[in-house]
Image 1 (cartoon, rainbow, N blue to C red):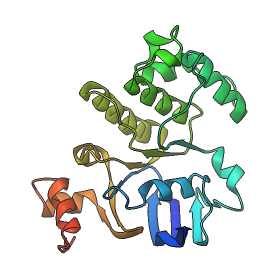
Image 2 (cartoon, one colour):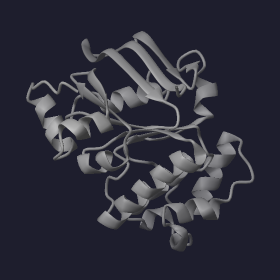
Image 3 (cartoon, rainbow, N blue to C red):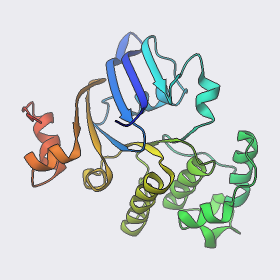
Image 4 (cartoon, rainbow, N blue to C red):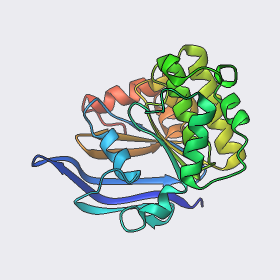
Length: 243
């Protein structure tokens, strides 16, 4: 049985008196890819921000890599990489210098930055400042920054935004490689269901701030041979998956 990388117990987060996250229970196993699905406004980004230490829940508990994300936040942050919402960079600097600053902040040395940039197909752009980057290039640099210090856990919120089909495929291959070769754990959300279907081991479905179902992808494939989209829309339409 694999160890648990992320475990939440009845998380609650409220904004302006409205429960954006409520009774949120999630289990992510180490060395796996967990795909979080949900309509816009379901609370996926808020949940990821809590797990990344960017927001503090008002109730419940979240353990990330065996540590409490609130009381042991600094210890957790050393071992996770995140891309949530639009990545922000030093615009006047090229990719290499941006990663060097990030690694210095993390207190990490002796990283082969060239290989990190090559992994996201940015090796030929290093002379250009980030201000000249396209949306897709920025997204790839954000992914490079998230994985540059070899974290145990990657939390990726819509990581393929702005990528062309070739870029999406390359990131898919990269994520699978990180799990296989580095035993990394990946928690990912995407509105591109086919991409989740290609890589995920476990699927979580989020509705109105709550995870209503966690199902192994293999179970879904057996019941929905036409793919993850059929399963997802069945759940959103109020159907029973019986998975």
